[in-house]
Length: 135
Image (cartoon, rainbow, N blue to C red):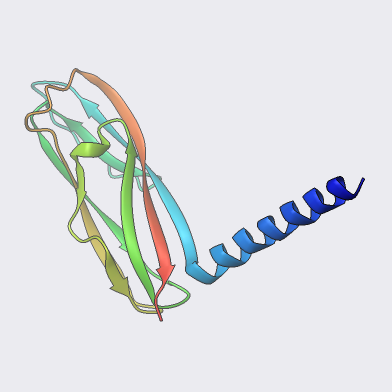
């Protein structure tokens, strides 16, 4: 019975430690979905703002989309990661930068499929912004 109580206390302390560490380090984590339609011989744009739409591009095309960052609760280092289909072809004009509290910043994202040999189709993923407290 003592082992069970010790295990429960150990797990509770571990969860509390992780929670405190997360709240002391991370200010916020925000993810944005992205999509791209690949169709050779065509090009198109989608200006909807429900996600980062890179539009319709050819398998060797390039598309750019801006993302506006605002209302950050405290000075933070921003780290950007892309996940999902074709994430290795997505780049941010700036990454690993400091943003001040209440600063407004626009970041341009580019999908460059040159050399990808991508097949026609619709592809999706997420771009995640990690805001890490900067003292």
